[in-house]
Every structure is written in structure tokens, then in C-alpha cells.
Length: 90
Image (cartoon, rainbow, N blue to C red; front, side, top):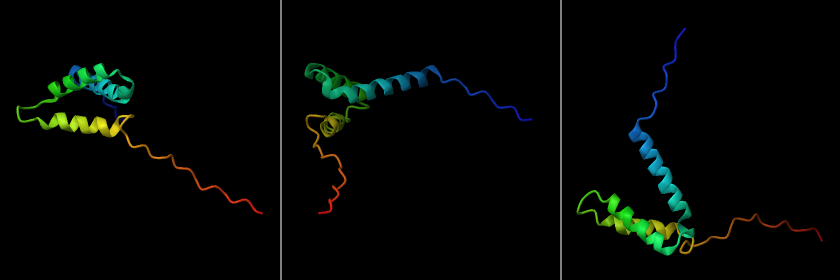
């Protein structure tokens, strides 16, 4: 009878990466509700932490575009889909 191998537990680095991902997703999800001052602080910290090299200046523009495209106040709202109304018989 084959014995199943125990699933290795995640390393501390894997857990930290998961936690950072969850916290980042939560911040992005709540972005519209955050005070503007906190948005600016988070944005600048994200740019600082996300830079991979001195030539990585495009990150600032990419983050700004991402937030603009997903921010509740700047997102172009589409009307929710509504099925066509049924015509009533006369």
C-alpha cells in the first residue's frame, strides 16, 4: 500500500511572500476608501520598494496607470448588464 508523503510546510520566506501579497491586495482593494495622504504615502513606498534598478523609473508610471484604471473615482463605469425587458402582450 503506497504511503503518501507529508506535504512540506511553507518556508518562512514563502509565508512572508504570501502575507505581503495579501496585504498588497487588501490595500489595492480598499484604495478608493483610503485618505489621499495615506494613498500618497503608500504609492511612494511601493515605488521605492518596487525599484529593481536605477533605470526602473517606469514603475511609477505603471503603478499610476494601474491605480487610475482601477480607482473608483477615475474608473469609467459601465452600466450593469440588464437583460432586455419582455414585451407584454396587448
